[in-house]
Picture 1 (tube, rainbow, N blue to C red):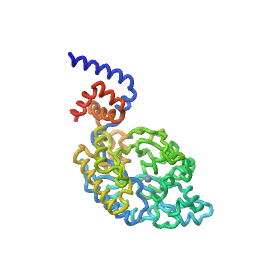
Picture 2: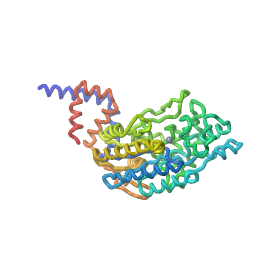
Picture 3: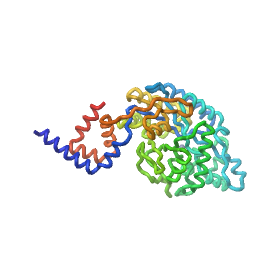
Picture 4: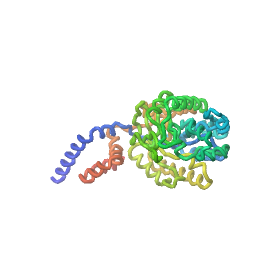
Length: 414
Ligand SMILES: [Zn+2]
């Protein structure tokens, strides 16, 4: 009798909550749920660099090659590429204040060749990060003014790197020379994006179907222009920032993006959900593995963010980062089922078209499509998505006792 009363109460609560949150429940249910587990390694800021960068990239490839998924594919580094560096001598000599650049293959032919090698081996898929990792017009103006913020660049133009700039100056689609940052005009943006997509294709033999904006700073106008140039997939950290405010803080104009959501220009968003940036000191292989488990429970892709700087600084930092990445990949493949390694443009394609073959257009390899969950096989990851995203529902589940049947479903549906 008591069970009947509890069961009836649960049904009543469920009916009320369902009526209250129906759009949320429906939207969550209609998301994509993977039966295989896509695992991506997303690494920003690869581009022009010195001999050390080349060696480190090759060592990274050696590590990635040792890990194979359920179809025998090695881990793929989705390398977000910066296509050029400022040509400081030319900028200084140009009285009109125009910006000049040197392309990746001109300024760093060794690292460019290493990238082509990685592409051929199938351990690197390039993705457009930006024509440069700064705002060219603002940079040229600061050069002409001999501004102290770029003094290093003027003195050590050969060894200088954009990572030496103050972070407000590293945005590409905004001018950060004064705060708040200003979005560049549509005309400027179009010129940059058209040139970037052309140069990317010339350098790597295929268009960049996907992108991630430098410093995560972009807006709807940039998305529209990307779409016009064939960029249909946007990598995010789960939000979009259109500027920095006058204190330098990021301003989010979209504060919540889920993997598979569509932009106003109908591009698919991807979301990085595992942070592995050990040089920052905030996370490590263990915390990243925990985040990977959380993604797996929700039948989401495991998208690992790990920037170049983790691998291009001191020997000690590099060894630590590489060892941790190896450990993280081992932990994921040993404990999580149905692993499939792929790149971001390939994952984006899986969201945009049903059951298509996975194609790496950069080395013309093909892999079978990812398996998806449907019907009741979605129920457990669906409940986990609600659990991790909506704390008020979790509180209600605990108070009402509905957490008990929900836990049983999650436990026994494995
Ligand atoms: Zn970057």
